Structure formats: structure tokens, C-alpha cells
Amino acid sequence: MTIDDRRELDRLVASWREWLERRDALSAQDIDELEGHLLDRVDSLRAAGLHDDEAFLVAVKRLGAVDELSREYARVHSERLWKQLVLDDGANGDGRSAASGDRDASGAPTSFLRRANGLAVALGLGVGAGLAVKVADLVGVDPTFFLRNAAILVLPFLAAWFAWRHRPPIGALAGIAGAFALAAVVLNAYPFGPGAGTAAFATEPSMTELLAAVHAAVALWLVTGVAYAAGDWRSSDARMDFVRFSGEWAVYYLLIALVGGGLSALTIGVFSTIDVEVAWFFDQWVLPCAIPGAVLVAAWLVEAKQRVIENIAPVLTKVFTPLFAIVVIALVVAAALQWNVVDADRELLIAFDLVLVVVLALLVYSYSSRDPMQPAGWFERIQFVMLVGALIVDLVVLVAMVGRTGEFGFSANKTASLGLNLILLANLAWAAWLHLGFLRGRTPFLRLERWQTAYLPVYVAWSAVVVVAFPPLFGFA
Amino acid sequence: MRIGKDLVAAAATPVVLGILAEGESYGYAILQRISELSGGELEWSDGMLYPLLHRLERLGHVESEWGASPTGRPRKHYRLSSQGAATLAEQRRQWDVVGDVLAKVWPDGPGGGGSARLALGGA
Image 1: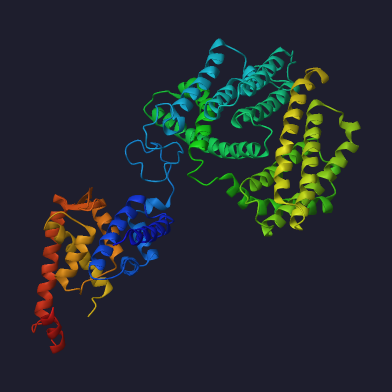
Image 2 (image 1 turned 180 degrees about the vertical axis):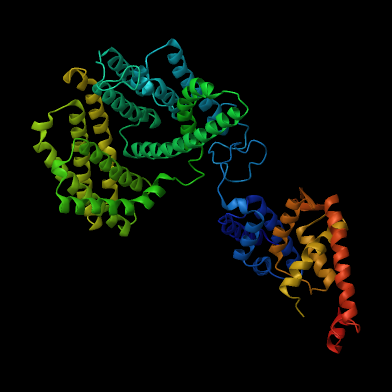
């Protein structure tokens, strides 16, 4: 056999391998085994006088139809059709099995810290976040302290995790640290007044305090994203990645919280049947440590599974966009028929802020997983209907509310919801315009995505205004 | 004559276990051996042997180990486990019963007709 023949056969076998590798049911080792068989068969056919390419064709034919074969493999190895999260980075010699999900699994043993996508570091930081909260609790601060400082106590650990994973430049880290320091000073130095109404807590937070705390959390989360983007926060793609991260993180956090809550309830229940009281332990140790700790575990999980499991947030948007479009249309119809939004109470604006936030989230997370080159289809039309419907209802509500400010006055709460409403309205109005252009094939999809990522600093700025300027403006009430 | 699909499927496990009882082997050699023993009558597409071997391995009837062929290609060798030997003995008892019954209902021997006997003689 000449060298050319050998090369030709190698090429045929390589393309055959590549074809088999697309089947999820076959592992690399299975294909190795089949390849060995194929070559044995080729050898014996060649000994019988066949040419290389003939022998190859016959041998492949004798292996049988690939669909049937992979179905048979799938019946034996049904678990392979479900993508699994592999944590050991192939460090135990099983490096051939493909889906280890870690890019730097080059076969060399990974260091302890790097192993399993840095699980040890994530857990360490998670314990740190838990301890930070617990120590503050032990020092004996009032409940409103936690309300104000929840983000300041926990998010630095998340930023540290991102810093370890993505190595942002020192300048970016200094900026993030500055933002945290500023938030800490403002939230704790302002003389917030006592809250109104009956006290559910020992001390009820005042309205400006509550607003500042919530907006500080939003702003600091987005600022933490600078570390996620490795300092490259001007890049639209890096911002979109952080948006994707946030969606997945929220889903995972919710799942962890649900399972953790269920497990805690079960434990407390089981112990109470044998007359051992453990609820205090959960109340004083497990909850204060687990709630911040899970923030880090969820963040670790998102990155560990990034290349293994499909993102879930875009799937949820695909499911709920049509349903929410129907809800929005129903709102338009109801508003047109009833015309009672004008008489509605002050909660209405907050409710509509939520509607707009949901519309925006559905929009952004569908962008996050979309192939930019794909032309507009029925899903984009449904999105457009949802957008326009939401804009119409919100405009009606806004006109009604602004017309009646004289009656309600500009409280901190109302101003904050009005501001948020205007910000979201501006975003969605321009998004709807771009969307229309995209539906008509005049606007490239990239511009829709760029608009959303370009808008992120607006949220940071508005949140910063609510945190820094609102309390003095509204007399810390 | 081609043996029906269901019968091939039923026979595959005892045949493969029986061949492995003769000694450690690998996929290609097992197929060669089956073809040799059945005169080419008992056949299925080559690839299907491997999922079967993997199922037997999962059930604990066989054990496997990666080795190398004389030319240096990686090759997976299979070996009957003690549990596999017990399964083989059990299956053998069952097939004996079936064989006895068939021999009694067909007293003239397999097929009963002349052509089948001819084919048997040719094999």
C-alpha cells in the first residue's frame, strides 16, 4: 500500500468519525471502538483484494445505518441524551469524555483552586458573605441596617468572585470599590427618619430609606457587572453577557432558594416530631448564612454550566412572551372599555412599572439568545404587539397620573415610580421603533441589541440619583 | 435463509456470552466467530454488537479493558464475569428446554422438508 492510499483512507476515516461525533448518544470512546472495528474490517477486505476506498465503503455499510446504531446506543446509555454537569474537569483520566465543560481541561492536572470551575473559591467567598451578614447580626444592629446594607454586605464577595474569574484591571476594581464605599457612606450616614404606619419591625424604615436601599442594590449589581466584563464595560457584547449572566443567576438563585426552603422545612418538621427544637438554629444561623452564600453558589453554577446546559431565561421568555402579549392586549381593551384608570389609586403607577419591567425583561432575554442574522418571524411580531400594547396602556396611565399630581403631591415614592416609568417608557418607545424597522427589514438586529446594552448606564444613573439625592430632597421621610 | 430479526435478538445474548466463555475477545473477533460458527446465517449489522456488549457490561455480565491490537490500534477487550457465567448457564437451561420442545414437535428434525435439510448439509 502506498503512502497516498494510507492518507486517503485516513481522510475517509476522519470524515466518518466527524459524522459520528455529531450523535449525542455516542461517546468518543465508543467511536474509538467502532473505528478499531472498521479498520479491522478494512484490513481483512483489503486482504481479499479490495481497494482502500471499496473496502472502506463495504466496512461502513456493514456497520449498519448510523441512525439505528445511535438509537441502540441511546437505549443503553440513555443518560447521554441529557447533558450533565461534569465537575471533575477530566482530572481522573477520563479526559476523553467530551463534555467536561471547562476550556482549560488540557489533560494536565488542574490546581485545587481551579478545579471544578473554581468551586472551592466560590464556596469560600460564599461562606465569607454569610459570615459578613452573621457578624453584623451578632454585633447587634437594628433590622433596618440589613435592609440598607444587604447589597453592600454581599455583593463585594460577588465582585471578588468575578475579579478572580475574569481578572479585571486594577482601575476597574478601584472604581467598583469606590462605588461600594460611596453607597455605604450615603446609606449609613444619612439621618433617615422613622417610618410611618404601624411597626412590623422594631423600627420601620422610612420611605426614602427603603427606596435608597432597593435602588442601591440595583446600581451595585450593575456596577459589579464591570468586574464580570473584566473592566471592558464599554463593550456592548460584554454588557450583553452580563445581562445573560443575570438572567441565569436569577433562575438558579430561585431554584436554590426553593429547594433550600423545602429542605429546611422538612428538617424542622422531622426534628419537631422527636421533640427537638431546631427552628432557632435555622432562624439564627442557616438563613443568615445561606441566603448570602447562595448568591455565590448560583453565580458559580451559572459559569460552570455555561457551556454545558442551554440557557433557561431565553426559554422562559419564549414561553411567556405570547401569554404576556395577550395580557397586555386585555389591559388595553379593559382600559378602553372601563376608562377608570383615571380614578385609580396611587398603587397603579407601581403596578405599571412592574408591567414595563416584565415587558423589558421579556424583550432583552429574547434578544440575548437570538441569532443576529436570522430575519424577523412570528415571534418578533408578537413582541411588537406586546411592546405597542404596553406603551399605549402606560401612556394612558401616565397622562391620568400626571394630571392628578396636584391631588396626590410629589411624595418620594411617587416621584421614584414616575421616574422609573418615564425611563422605561423612553426605552420601550425607542425599542418599539427599532423593532418596527427590524420587522420591515430596514434595521439590522444588532441595533436593537445595542440599544438595550447602551441603556444600562441609565439605570445605574437613575438608581444613583434615588440613593444620593432623594433622601435630602424629601427630608429623609 | 435469513434468520428473523426477533430470533436474532433473542439469540444474540447467549451467543455472545457463549463466545466470551471461550476466552477474552473483542468486537471484531466476536463477529468473525459468530459468522464462522453459523456459516454466515446468523448475522446482524456489525455496529449493533457494540451496544449489546455495553448493555452486558452495564448488567455486570462482562468486563472490559482497553488494550491494543498487534498493529498498535486501541482495542477494547471483553471478558466474561462470574455473574455472566451464571447468566450463561441459566440461559443455556432455558434454551435447552426450548430446543427439547421443538425437537419433540418436529420429530423429523429441523424444517422437516428436503430443501432445509439440504441447506443444513451445506453449512
